[in-house]
Length: 324
Length: 233
Image (cartoon, rainbow over all chains, first blue to last red; front, side):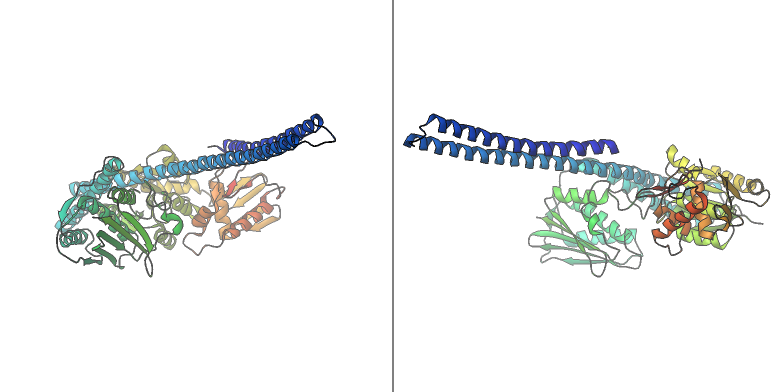
């Protein structure tokens, strides 16, 4: 919305409120004038010397009606005023949201361009180098392994994109049986494969070893996105703690890092689609702004909840609870 | 003498492959992962070409290019980026980049462009600087960037390094509003930046130097809540 349109909207809103107040006061005064006129008529039509019982009754009725109408005008005015204020507030809020979405969309386009093109560039460059140059086997091995990593990264981005396109409507949790031990092992081995040099600590707590039925495929995605963020936003020498367990008939997954943490003003927004902290002109880390959105949606479809706390001494702590 | 190339690219695999290729072609390569490392390298020695990614952590490649241009008008800068919209290219070229290549690119094309830019560099240096003077004039004023002097309302004044850098930035980006934050990034770089109040004081001085009525500035404009803009006409 342009500046002058915004000013026009503001003036209109103020005008509506002021007009409403003015009309209410006017109605109030008119009501009073009618009451006084009626009272006068009553006094004129009745005998000036003797107050009969019927005149007194009529007068009382008049006063009652007047009082009722006064309250009615006041009530209606307040009701309409509050409705108008709520309406204005809702419009304003959705406008602000719209502005955020537009900004996020631009950020998303920039980040998705970067996230799709960078691995392609890296792979292409590696292959062209191998094709063009006489390289030692070690150099070739280095280029090949970095290309494989880039291919994995590209796959991940494409998977997240495809999933985010259907997660809001068509995602259906698919319960399957797995033991917590098995889940932890598979997650730990994936972590070791992706980040061999990072200190990732698993704590696995379960009272029994019976298989647990849950949407494990969805939880895999949740876990992957949380651990990726924890790795991305904490420095290489800092450990990342993961705990998985059954707490009061709920699966509880906690991922804590010792990174810089998330500012309270960003906390509500980080789960929004396309939202990335900061500006895309400077990129502080890879990502498309889809990860935490997927986490929220999958947890929601599984009727679970997410809590985000400050980790001590620094960093963030994501706690996911999924009812069984 | 071997040509020296500075690579600034935050993606490790691309940075490594580029370094490998350029080294195999006989260049001496310094590779940096972020803008601040690059600024330190840039200050410590002379490069024959800068290969610059646009989306960098901490500071955008466009601002980094503007920072390089404050002190070195001629070093060829080749921008590499995933962003291919015309406005991105224009923004890159406007800050003084010499060439622009979008990712993914052909290795051969990149190597040829690098070779050409380096080959043409001595000629470009001569053309840009035939007498060793670097002077900008507007109205009745004259700024000599090489001597750090300016003909002003107060006569001939000596400019500090930072004053000259800020003037250069505003003049290079004439008609474009520059935020205080960007000014801090570009002019002060990785040094400990002062408060934005310092920039306001610099502009007050410029108005005293170069405005006929400093209270109603016609050249150094304030952009409310954002920063400053220079117009020569």
